[in-house]
Image (cartoon, rainbow, N blue to C red; front, top):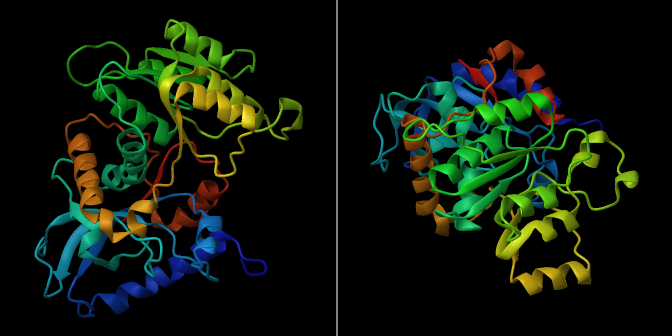
Length: 359
């Protein structure tokens, strides 16, 4: 980025502009035929992938922050058929959006919005969208979760991990998860389905906080030596423990562990953009007929071909929130004046729960 530029400085600039925009936008007519003017009720803060933005030539001095929003429709353009004033809506602003969700009123293209069910609160709606899209992308498009399959969700107590665990279990899969602390382990063990059996959502929680437990061994033991069908990692260790600088990286599984615990025909879904596989790794994956997929949930909005599927995902996330299948890990709602501090925490990966600004 530019000299001395940091995402949270951009956030601060954007927040100031958001304040100013209210007086400007409220009297503005809807700009485009497909635009929807939305009064924002809640906006979730997510980590900004500045590397992706710069690779896509979208990096600017000030980047708008806050893309997952929920709110009320104030006005619609001439060609908007799906919404009318007073509708309650949710959506994710596109990657190249000039608008920040941390504004009281914004203009959004109709194809980025779906209706919010009445019983779902504003904060939960905005706070579950991104993790929901990631979970659906991983478990429905990059793999095919179904009854009888075994799914390993690394760091299942994270906001994304929790939603992935809930989606996999609701689809009939057996779920195994790793925990990085005693608190995370207890959190995962407390998860229960809202309907039917009161069995825990997670069949086995592997506590890796002391660095002594072998994840591959535990998974093979849990699956009778067959290995797991789907792995969702939360980062992997590419080098030996001694070469990793921070403790969290040392606790991550090594890529060999993941390849070892994968079953025949298994799917490894990774968030590790710099994953490097050596010929022996590839050969082992070949022998298992396994696949490696990269989880980048931004792809939905980079091509309009997938627009219909994407909106179906958003609608399904809302339906699962409404029926309590999804119970997100959200922090207390953040007031607008604390948005800068919250965004700073999010960008430094210091927020353990999803941060949502409430208006």
